[in-house]
Image 1 (tube, one colour):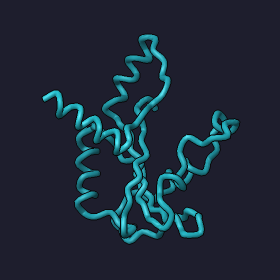
Image 2 (cartoon, helix red, strand yellow; image 1 turned 135 degrees about the horizontal axis):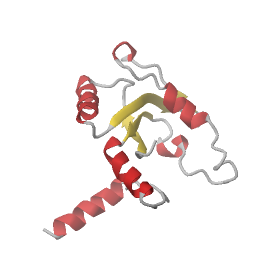
Image 3 (cartoon, helix red, strand yellow; image 1 turned 60 degrees about the horizontal axis):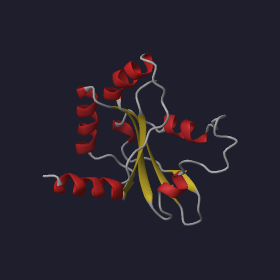
Amino acid sequence: MSAPVQLITIGVDRPEVPDSVLAEFTRLSDSGLVKVLDVIFVQHNEDGYVDSVDRLDADRMQFDGSLISELLTTPDAEDASDATPVWSVHDAVPQGQMAALVLVEHTWAGPLVSAMLDSGGRMFDELWLSAEDRQLLASLLAARG
């Protein structure tokens, strides 16, 4: 898979994807820009454990959370020796809160990455800007007119 994949964490009050969000998943997939690969709801309990939450919309969703669950629980041999994890659902979801984890493949970037790799480039890293960094970027862009 050469296209970048992103795991988006969104705080929610209910373990359900509203119809408007389902429509957006369809629109994005139809556009060919991104592909939603999976969705799971999790609760970071007060005792510190993170558990999946039974969905209210299971009957109308094609995503069951199994892909994300496997991805998050399968150790990566390359990262196994690293004592500091790069990302943790425990850190991403505040204790006592519920979140939707949405796994998205950025299909629009696949041909670009492939072309760069085919021409001798090497993938070093992927960086996603935090909400604070995106606000800073918006301010910088606004200042340029």
